Image (cartoon, rainbow, N blue to C red; front, side, top):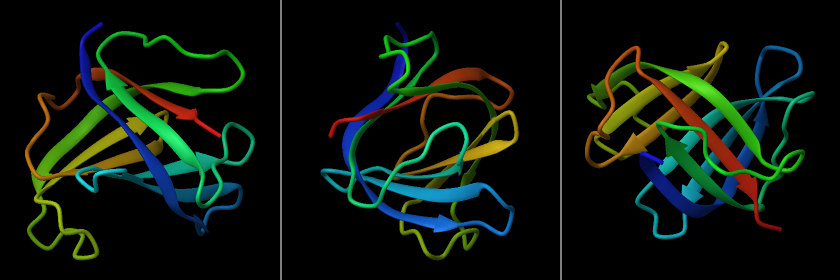
Length: 128
């Protein structure tokens, strides 16, 4: 498996988006090095604030627990320096992915080895 990123973290916040049934989840890694903001559809997968999770990004289908973990095939939309694009986040690089229109945004200090239009898999596994 060509793993790009894997970390354990905590759901920092879950807020209602303007679109009905869509929530915005924010995950922070245990070491604070990784931040993910992702759209969550209430009928597909919901995280709760404070929940411990494992986040994984890979170029092939990861192992997962059917009916428990969320796995989605994403397209890399863009990779940009965070030069005022999202002042609420301190990380230097923004990676925008789309899973059928649901956005996954990764904030990193260094760019990940990804290219726009590349297909990757996003896995979020509840740990508690």
